Amino acid sequence: MPERATPLRILLADDHVTVRRGLKLLIEAEPDMQVIAEASDGKVAMQHAIASKPDVIVMDISMPGMNGLEATRALKQKQPNVVIVTLTRHSDEAYVQELVRAGVAGYVLKQSAPNELIQAIRAAAAGGQYIDSTLTSRMTARLIGRADKPSKPTAEVTERESSVLRLIAAGYSNKEIAAQLSLSVKTVEAHKANAMKKLGLRGRIDIVKYAVLQGWLQNP
Image (cartoon, rainbow, N blue to C red; front, side, top):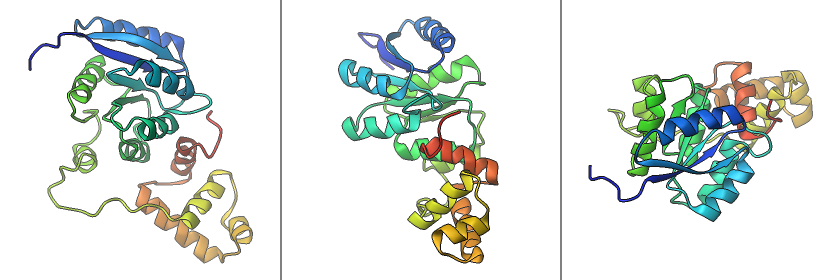
């Protein structure tokens, strides 16, 4: 690969100052990378991204106000070619699926080796896609479309399934949800099962995590 004439311009978005400082040191130790701006939430990240047009945005998911997924979706609407690498502690399949579906070019775990992020930034800047190597190869193949068998795209949850998941995440029982939505308990259970299957969720904890990711609940 030919050397770039100018360093890659990186925007860091993470609500922890110490994390941003560590990431900046890591990134700027590379001769072909430079951190040009930092943000502590999704809204500020969007403002910097629009103003300075970085080559790559390294974006955390769990930030106050506008979280990383919301910021990614909003940025992709305004600037479809924006390049975003998600850096997070969440290895849950639902998180990975949603961020890749939203258009991120990389998904890296904070608990992985530092070189994972550097590789992801380079791959994303070159127009590729990078999924953390500690995630299963099966998941990686499916998410970047390299599975051996052709498969249908992941089905979207319906509005009713989404309503059921929201209420489950908020702590309501199946009986209470049935009363609120004027459904039978069996129908609520069917919607719950269908949505969980589509999203790869394994239980109530996964549903709550998914709800936080979607911005249905306040970030912890």
